Amino acid sequence: MRIFINILSLLILIGMIVGFIIKSNNPTIGDRVIGISILAGAFILMPAFIIYRSRGKKFKDYMLTNENLQKMKDFQKERSENRRRNNN
Image 1 (cartoon, rainbow, N blue to C red):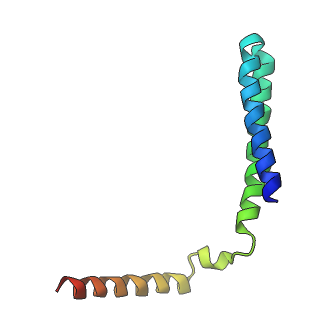
Image 2 (spheres, one colour):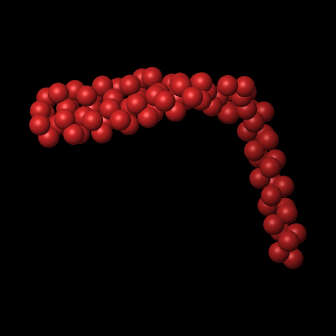
Image 3 (cartoon, rainbow, N blue to C red):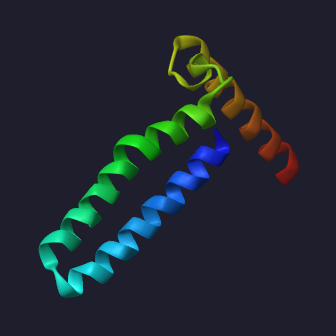
């Protein structure tokens, strides 16, 4: 998957560069090549990257549930208590 993402990002970058080069001679075709490269980046590369990076992670850890809010409050209390002890 990592190799696919690297190759695809390289192809999209090359496509954008080629689009800008073509745009100097033929603006219509150059704009189309740039647009296709951007669409490929948005609709193929970005979801593939998100799926690759989020594999094996628990989405519940990133959601604001009552349990996670309580953990955040407890962590903040501990942190403020540690700061008060260190300053005295």
